[in-house]
Image (cartoon, rainbow, N blue to C red; front, top):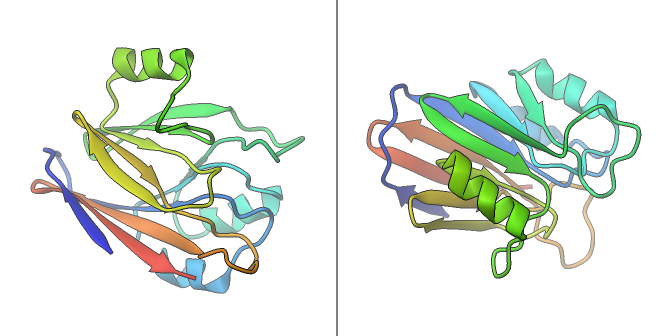
Amino acid sequence: MENQIEKKTEHKIKVGVLSDTHGHLDRKILEYFQGVDHIIHGGDIGLPWLILQLEEIAPVTAVLGNNDADIDYKESEMLTLGGRKFLILHEYDIDSPSDKIRKRIIRENPDVVIFGHTHKRFCQEMGKTLFFNPGYAGEPINHHERSVAILHCDESGITAEFKPL
């Protein structure tokens, strides 16, 4: 499944995106993310060693999820990659965002908002912002579709490529 989002960028980059690993790092993720420029983890990391393994592939920016305890990450991060601003947080309610997050999006005007928590893929442009959830990357559980994603960013836009696990 691919979605093309029209936005300008200064550089061609590939960003690996995952969320809700809950301490499980599927070997396919390491294969899929080979060659990415940066990795973003949208929370519910589980165990800190998981981030260390991802850092062997590319720099990682991660945020805390509602199930993360005693891990030294922030609840949200703002990151600029390839001329684009990424707001990363774990929980985002598409239908009813909190006032705090809605105001932050207006104030900081990110190109992409990356989130997790729902365990469901999501890729939709609202206004000039792409709202993106890579899906659930944790251990196999009945009826849970598992995935990660790669965002391809270049001068023609952002292409979201979901990868099944």
